Every structure is written in C-alpha cells, then in structure tokens.
Image (tube, rainbow over all chains, first blue to last red; front, side):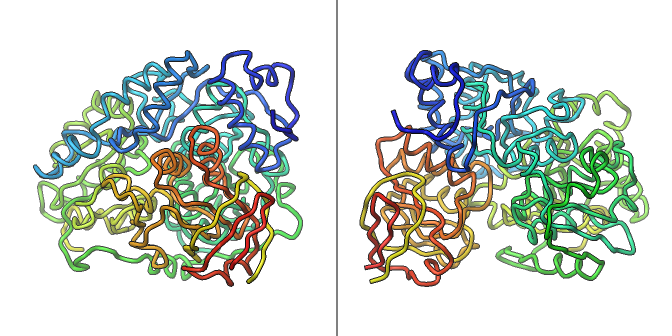
Length: 429
Length: 146
C-alpha cells in the first residue's frame, strides 16, 4: 500500500485495506489521494444528513460514468446517505424545435432514463429532488450550521457554506458521491477554520442596491477562488436573513462561484459567521476591492456577446438559474403582470421560461398565482437551463437571461432584472 | 533545453508535444464536443479559449495554469481518460485546483490509462513553454522542455 501522510482512524484504514471489499477500498483510496493533494491532515465524518450531486444528466457519451455506477451498485457500494441532485435537462413544456428534440432525446440525453434508475438505486431522495436549490425549505435538504457536507454544484456549495454556515469544499462530480458512500471527507480548505478566513475585503460603495448577479460576477472575477468579506451590503439587503436576503444571496453567490471559483463569502452583519466573528474573520494582509456603480457598469459591459448575429431578436428567455425561490416566483409573476399592463400587452413577447425546483413548482401551482402566470404566457419548468442550452444548436439560438452563471457557460446574453423585464413585456433587445 | 521541477500529483513518465493555454482550462467546454461526436483526437471545443480551440488535446502534454468551469470537470476528465482521449500528461504552473485534482485522481485509480500530473511548476514554466515543444516528464516531477 502507498505511504500516505494523511492520518486515518483504524476504521478508515480498514476500509482502505479492503475490509469492506475492493470497490469500497478504491473509493476510499480516491478520497485519500484527493485529500493528500491539498494537504489534508485527516478524514472527518460527513455530518450533514443528505448529500447533493451535480450530475443529473444522462449524456449518452458519459459511458464510463454509467459503467462506474453499475460497478458500485453491483458491489453494494451505495451511498450511506440519501441525496438530491441537480435539475433534469429535459422538460417537454420548454420550447424546442423538432430537430432540437430529436438531438436531446435520441442523441444527447439518450441515457437519461437509465441514469435516473442508477441514481435511485444509489440513494436519490425522490423524483422531486432534482434541483440546484436543494437547500430551500420546500426541497428539504437544508444543512445545519457546522455540518460537514459532501456536495458538488458550485452554487449550492457556496450557499451552504456562506448563508447556512455548513462546511463543504468545491468538490467535483463523483468525488461528492464517494464522500456520501464512505461517510468521510478529507479535512482541508473550507472545512477548516483557517480556510474560512477572508483574504479579500470587498467594500460596496454604490448609490443603489447592486444587481446581485453583477456584484457576484465582479467579486468572483476579482478574487477567483479566495474568500471575500463583503462590507456595505447590509445597507441594501439588511441584517436579517429573511426570504428576500436569502434569494439575493443565492443569485449573488452563484455568480461568484461561476464567474470566479468562490466557495465561501462572508457578508458583514448578515451571514452567520460574520455575525458571530465580525472582522476577526479577515486574514492578515487581506487585499481590498472597492466596488461602486461605475465598477459594476464596467464589469457588466465587459461581458462578450457571442451570438452569431449580435443584433438578432431573442428567441427564448430563461429566468431561474439557479432555480427561483417561491417568493421570487410570486415577485416575478407580479412584475410581469405589471410590465405587460404598462406596455399594453397581454402575453410576453419573447417565449419565456421560469425555472424552479419541482417541489417549489408544486407549491406555486396550488396558489392563484399559477393561473395568473399562465395568463402572461410564461412557462414554468423544473428544467436546468444550462443543460438545455448545452447542445450544438443553441449556439445559433439567441437566448437571453438574467443569470450570470448561464451567461458564463453558454451562448446566452445577460440582462439585468429590470432590462429583462422590459425585453419580455415590451420587446426590444 | 530547460528544466522545471514541480510537485507530483499523479506519478508517471512520458514524452509528448506541448499544448499550451495561458488561460484557465474549461474542462467541460473543452472536452464535451469531442466526447459527444466520437472525435478520438479530442479537439478542444471551447470557443472562449483561443489558445486551444479546435486543437487536438489527446496525447499532448497539456500545459495550463488551472482548470475552470463546471464542477462536472473532474468527471469529464475521468471520462476522457477512460475513453483514451486524455492528454498524455497535465502540467500545471499553479497549485492544482480541486476539480482537476479530482479528474487526475479518478483517472489514476479507476482507469487503465496513465496521465501523469504535475503541479506548481511556476509562472516561468508557462511563459517559457510553447505549443509544439517536445516535453519529457519524469517520475519525480521533473519536466524538461527538450
């Protein structure tokens, strides 16, 4: 056996030595090697009740992943905890051409049904657990402060760390599943007190509330994988983690994690560790980044437009990457209604899809707002916009979004919330 | 000839032609197209990376600062290795990131293919090495630009 520096308990060493079978030993070996790369000193128990996986899509080409899953299942090496998973890539309610549907079902996501079956055998909570916002009350995978997690999905990890005070590294797909299987994760990075110290101070000095997705983008691009301590934002979003603040931080965090690689941020006077420890969280010699309205405008103007025809009329709009909260769905319904009324239109002028977790959609559909939203022509879906756009045809399709994550990973074009409301209710680009 | 010394993440020795990106390497965007369309040379599909776009990645000494993008990155790298479309080695100028490390380790433990991975080679390495240079990687993390 290789000479590992990481300190293992007798139980962990036994697993590594094959006491629970060769496959389980390889799972442990993978985590040990992964941890050693980052100087992990030990393996610690996963204390969060549920896991969360990033890979929800049954891309036909990922045969090695399905073979690995088959081997794990056949050898009885399944997750020791239930888990949620990112959103599904397909929903028949979302507009797609005949050719797109053909490519999606027969070519790209041909392994979807098979992979869904593997996830169920491995420990998926339920068929309603497909969402990137697993931490919402309606979904029920909400970690407690201090819980150690084995999650992937950058937007969920940064939310769990920052807003909930849980502890999780930015894991890759498969690694997060292995942590849930074996019940231990290597102790390094954002699991440690030292790794949670801020090495950047961000001073927000804007004259109006910053657009969450642009502020997150600016910070992500500046600090990359470091931890920022953000001052001055409580002035705009308050000092209470209510629904509005949490929704803001969800969108803000997703942008920090996708435009950069942020896994944890602290908001002065608001997020749990910042409330408890204040500026003691700031490391010595932290760098400073001042953000005013001009800086946000500069960042927004720096986004490239990679549509083939830059002046094309938008063909589709996605709102909800990450998935919308219940409160955001209500708010957007009211905004669209008001926007249409002001513009003298009855229905949205660009095909528009709002996306939310299946259980949030279910809750929303039980209210009168569901019928009101339907009347505006907006489609409500549980789909992953990113996976929908992740095909060769979408490069030619002018899609607009208010998501900086979707903009980063696809050819979609970014607009602020106010701009996009204008686009879909009044028209124009 | 110039020699650099890095840290061994996954041990191994190989010789290959360098393929260099100065920007972060987006693993999903780079590999998805080639994996999907059965391109055994693994031409890079990331339109946002002018250093690599459309260049074959399989069998090269991929020289990069770090990887960026989706947290599926490690899994994608594992798929590329399992399908034999991986770079011959990964040579990082900076300390390796968690997604690339996952891909390198998964490839090492779960596939038959070897993909030696060295990190912390320093900024000078990436400033010196050019696409097309002959590279020799040794077991102890020594990287020689021949």
